[in-house]
Image (cartoon, rainbow, N blue to C red; front, top):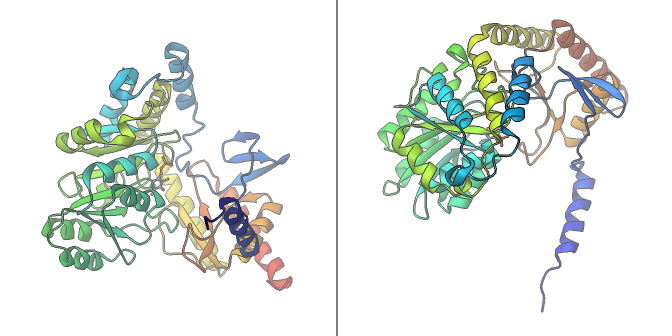
Length: 396
Ligand SMILES: *Cc1c(COP(=O)(O)O)cnc(C)c1O
């Protein structure tokens, strides 16, 4: 027998990660106070959270969670279709559908699960799934799970998407894109993609994990910002764990598509429903996200301040107007060194390395939030400049 030994393979992969500066380790946060977090006995200003609107620690949101948990308990007890579906889930789905302008919304345990569900429920062996090269890992895995043919087009190239659809005219097809790209911060060309989908009779699915709450009128996301609706984008994903500060996700679309998901998607059927109290917290968060335009205005002002300051200091940022402001460093070791130098000065911006981003494009994924102050942003800029000088001197 010549069966490969799994443990040997794991050891070799680990050794390779060590050599490449690709070891991944969790950092344990012991306390949080808005954008300040404590770990290892030190407080740092956090510049790598997706809590863009500062809702995760908002009083009304945490209060809604507490009240609902006191009243209804914690776990939902079962999947939605058995007996886990609660009136608080219904209320949240209705609020999200109303906000985002879709006939119906369906809650999922997470964005990752929702993406697995959507693709698996819609596409099978013979079908075609056309995706942006930089789409989120969950979308790539979703296509693999569905067993369909996966074709990836160059980043933000709607023409490329169109070519791939034309090459396979006989297959049922979807185009899938991030609305805001999670590691780059740029926005997909949704109008062009919607047109490509229309002429090719493909279904467009937009994963707007980082757009909802942040972009567009009333924070309705990248789809609304592109002046598209459920006709142009029949399905979209919003996550509850990013700008909305909670946990979970929702898929929005018309009655037929959402009905199909709710009855057939395995990652919907065979998993426990979100705790109802979490739905209550997200309901409170959505209401604040809709109402508090100042959170988006403040965020935009901080993004502009950061970009201006970075340009003045000679830092090359990626072209992004969203709160995701990556600073591409290049090598994994250099990205880690810069993150460590910032951390020594009290700022936390995690180094993001391959395979999360393409080879040779390791970066600090700096994210801004409405809970940051101008002084936080100026402090980060100062720390970046000093860190860069220090690393240059050390010959990095
Ligand atoms: C974070 C993210 C997801 C996954 O959402 P979770 O709720 O965290 O599982 C999906 N798509 C994109 C683009 C994301 O950034």
